[in-house]
Length: 515
Image (cartoon, rainbow, N blue to C red):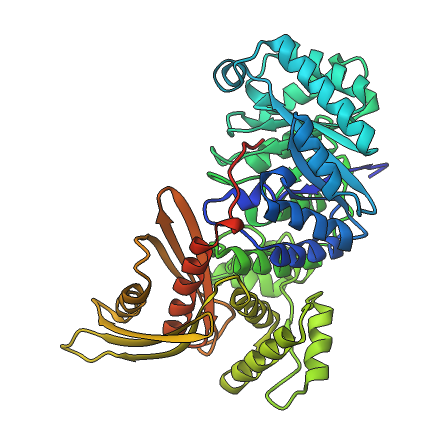
């Protein structure tokens, strides 16, 4: 196969992925994901947008202080305040990067920025110089590059490389481009920009037309050496290029792509499940690589072929991407030491002893109900424990639901808020509706329920149910999650979690723009 260039894998799940409506994550949740990305050998982790909120700043700082083997990045607009805030958050990183950007397409410059091209170029150069004074690794992005005039792209790229940017990113911000066209742009840029050899050219593709992965791979074939992507293709609108699809396409088609990655694919399925659990965005069964049906064969012809020779219908091994035995060799008789050891294997830790004790109690409760415990069960119970430590958390204490044929279901609920228990009861069109109505009798949130989704956390009839509740109020969208072997309890937990987040606006950050 000959020499292969290194392809830098830049994960932006914690930044662009979080811009999915309702996909806000706590700093502790972000750290859990970042630690697993580090185990995967992901090269660059974009941990957030430090200036956008105190919560994002804290998350970037926490990850920069605790992740040592991946480069930690913060996004910033081409503004001095943004750049300085990013530099401050990254101060403790073993390897840090400031990623600054400005829009360069005619439509963005005229209507959003209301700036002339020369003004945009000057601001871009100034921003890179400021960032370069703070840190030795600076990335610059031309927002909406795929709709930017080619000559202007060349001018601004040459200028920011001269100013000190070592990575130049050309985002297909609105998913407008097509693979052949996007690859052509990359090749033309590399052949036209005089100092192109002094920087890595990068791509960041959105999936509005379902072409994000195809566009990214086309650009890699034509010279791009960094791809920006997310776990499960998470991201605003239709999402971003999927990390798992990019990595496995390159790994599977080594005959086609002139690059290699350092990513350990055995963590792909575990991190897919973790991100899905934390964000409440389920993975569709037919999703490539990580969907439940990705390696399933219904057709008798296919089954016969796979049994005789796996390669007849499978181009990858399920085990290679983490579809392996993830059962926990613990049960209801297991002690704290064994439980703590498994949490350590999963890079899960608690700052407070009380939180560990709550997690251990939750583990015992689950072990009493389930014959087999999976890593996903542990990730779900940790999320439950962390939800309970939110400021002003609304906690489920008790629930009783009566549902009989010919009668409206009736729910009685006890909610704890600031160490005081509150009781309510209500009927509804169904058991879940009755629960939500009872909660609303106490809270009167004036929110609108936009989504109610139930997914099995693991396999089997005794699986925990993972429930996602999406609420909207005055344009704010919040996802709440809950898990339990009883789906009604999980539903109540998810609704209370969403209400807790709705009452804690510090968890939200304004969408300052994306690339």
